[in-house]
Amino acid sequence: AEVLLEVEGLKKYFPIQSGLLRRTVGHVKAVDDVSFRLNYGETLGIVGESGCGKSTTGRMLMRVMEPTAGRIVFDGQDLTKLRGKQLKAVRRNFQMVFQDPYASLNPRMSIQDIISEPLVVNGIATAKQSESMVVQLLETVGLRARDRFRYPHEFSGGQRQRIGIARALSLHPKLIVADEAVSALDVSIQAQILNLMVSLKSEFNLSYIFISHNLAVVKHISDRIAVMYLGHIVELATKDEFYNNPLHPYSEALLSSVLTPSRKVKRERIILTGDVPNPANPPTGCPFHTRCPKVMQECRVTRPVLRDIRAGHSVACHLHA
Ligand code: SF4
Ligand code: MG
Image 1 (cartoon, protein in one colour):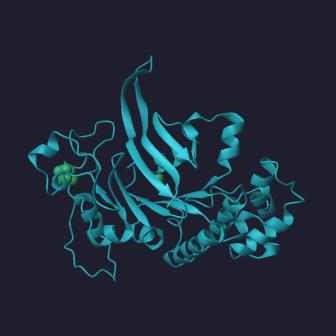
Image 2 (cartoon, helix red, strand yellow; image 1 turned 45 degrees about the vertical axis):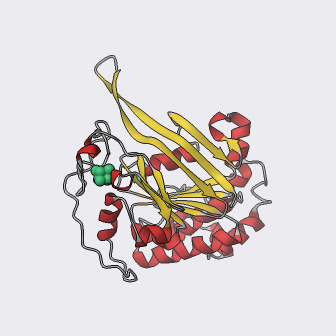
Image 3 (cartoon, helix red, strand yellow; image 1 turned 180 degrees about the vertical axis):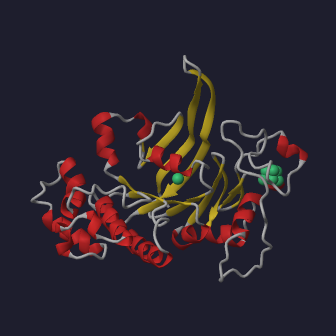
């Protein structure tokens, strides 16, 4: 399989400033040394609790946030080195679908203008020329041609997310990063949007990075799963491996709290005690050691690195070194 996206040593540290002189007294390590690959046509689900760094990772991939360190190679080009026109040209190839379709669509713009805006901004078509493309896109996402004359407030949440998807598709991107794209919707609507995204993937030759706190949602759509905790990827595996044979104690705990009727193995519910530590003051050693039911002495001292356990399954845990 060919690699579409390669992320290497990605970091985002936010300075913590204090006092009148705004002296930097420390850093919040929101994303700390994240590496992974995404192949053409693949969907990678990134899961974790809020504050684990998954959205920050997504924003850096979209180049709407500057990384503190690391490389993002997209389709053979190092995005972290591109500026201005070059960056703009590459940026067309990746688009984002956001959590809140209410907030991300301009309420004063008609659906026609919302969907055609990327085409107009990129000089691909005038508003007039883009009309037939907009009609086509609306039909592709399950809306009607005449919906283009209406405004966002006239649509339901699910319909607005369809509009957001149509807009993201207008430039025929290669990669879509969806950040909690169905989390604000009712469960029945979630399934419809996920099914739409699955069918669009083959129709438009898309690859997805699907960010969610919801393990049932990412299971539906992903080929591989990355689990993040306190800025690190702690487990990365193919979907079947992950859901049938999770290796990291954090993944086991997360999975034990989701009920999936299809699961063959019965798992005991693991209750995690303690809160997620403050990322400004992360634990030494393994980031999960303050909550891990299997913590050992070594875990308090040495941070386990993500390593391959078998083909298609990596984990960062001293139990699996
Ligand atoms: Fe738990 Fe230790 Fe593994 Fe961390 S390295 S997840 S503390 S067993
Ligand atoms: Mg988030």
